[in-house]
Length: 312
Image (cartoon, rainbow, N blue to C red; front, side, top):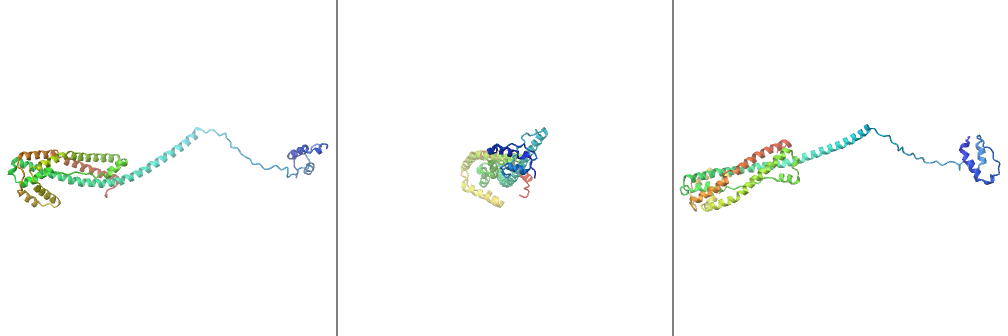
């Protein structure tokens, strides 16, 4: 195998400088065609010692990037924008589904509350409407005759209803829970508005009842001046029994009776009538209960339609 001088030239030069005993040897011209054997004879370094070790080559990255054009920047921006937008839409849809599911649970609970309210309001309205009619009859009796000339059974029976007393307590547990937790916005905007209106009307009725409490107390005090409690209580028990199972015969029997009165003073009767009229003059109880029944009916229809609650 023939090796070129270029590969071993460093070895020959090294030998010349490192071996002083050969300094006097006449220098021979370097022949480019020297054989491998001749070169090895003139050198004291073995080929194994002259082998260049393998070196690990590190390739440095090219730091000179080509400048991107506007289109590439725009495409990168568009991809990032679309990714963020789609993520936002996905999160919005997920929250919407979750809120609609929770709204349906609240709607079902509120529907039951409204059904209970409606049943209570119908009974409430019926009671005060009945009482107002009986009070009208009581006033008509006093307009045409003196108290002593009227059968006392009729005075006790019709006079009983001047002191009619009842209260409406709304089943608002669901509404209060949604209000305190800030969940009312789960409902559609129109339903949320109607729920707020219904609650406000309930509070109007309750505030009216509270305002009349003082008047109710004065009326009972006045009534106690001429009605004996024992017979007034008998009339009240007959009314309660007839609300469960109507029996007109028991009412007629009491009307024909003549229980004693504590006082026949017409002034006291007039005072009692005026107090009773103040309570029933505008019939707030009946008007508010009618409005609430109507409002509850519309709200229940909206909840059933929006959240598919027709079977409840």
